Amino acid sequence: MSDDAQTINDVNNPTERRDKMWEQSARLLGLMNGGSAVALLAFVQAIWQDMAELVVWVVYGLIVFAVGLALATIIPQLRESTILNWRSNKPKAKIYQFLYRWAAKLSVLSFLVGVGIVAYGILESLPKPTP
Image 1: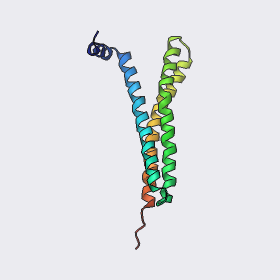
Image 2: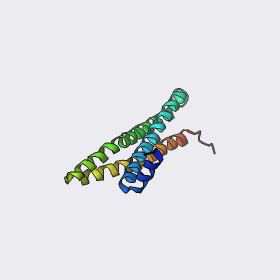
Image 3: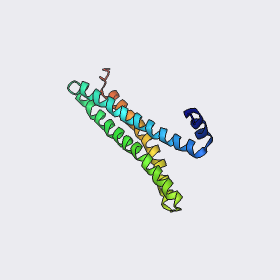
Image 4: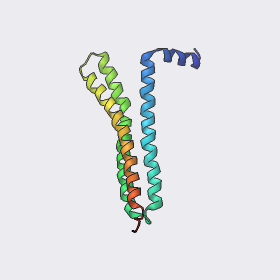
């Protein structure tokens, strides 16, 4: 079967479609949080000596992005645990399902909070207008 035919079959299968969606979502969350952390590390290097007051806010943002990245990293493992427990009719399946859904939500929230912290730090570091 060609790759195109397999893709069409996957799209027609709701379980495969849902699995692909969660896989891609976890990758996207990892890229968002991890990419932001890498960008901030480069930014810290550029401002380390000239804008010491902003460095503190950038480090807070890095911490939040690292938490978001960690949450994005555990989503596939939690999802796999959900599937394995669901197939075995274990009650832990609902707990794992709850955890991976909240890990995704908290990873998105971490990204937004991290951006907000850095933006706030930048605004606080701007020179104050004199009246």
